[in-house]
Image (cartoon, one colour):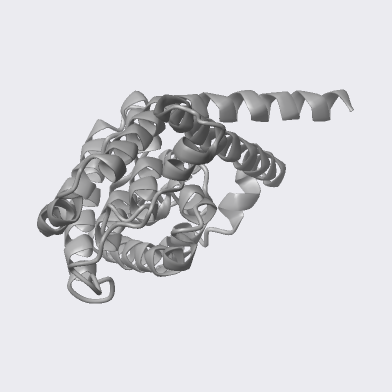
Length: 286
């Protein structure tokens, strides 16, 4: 019983650290969304113009080692302020803690290569999807109405600030709950058991890693980094796993009612590009 309580406390504290890092970013994003919804009359035209460079901006933003950026991008997408292909670019470029861990582990060349390759994958994949499978259906469509605006007008006369804070706290509470559950599940399974499922040396390994990367947890980047540095998975497999490892991003997509129906194509597109890119990297990079 004591061991279970200890594991639970460890899961909560570890998950809370990641969630707290995302609080400032989510607060800023929800503040911007509130401003865009209530003040910016030209927001639809601005969004339409920025879609042309969306994958590039998304790739550069996602490459910053911070789990909260994928969540921020998902929040923008949920409210109609971000194109689906741009969101995929953010997800593909996200590496969270992988780069710092590789640098601290003495794998500086691998860290730089990881960063550059993932940005390239994100840009190419983002533009390919933008002009094919995730092509915007209606250029003149307006953004989806935000839930946060309803909080601001109908919640006992609450101010915009309190509405933004409430939205941020609700999102963070949701993230914390899911993170704790996933952390306990990963701890119970164990890294050795996960490593045994990786099919080391197989061309299928990147596909499996891409699937595991879909687990909505920032801890996934730590797992893939450790497995790579210990020689369990290849560089291409790490690329595939980290390219789908968008952390909080998937949670936000599935939490917001406005994005649930649009979440599946984004997730499938992210996994497909990640798996294919991982296989290519595994073949070309030994």
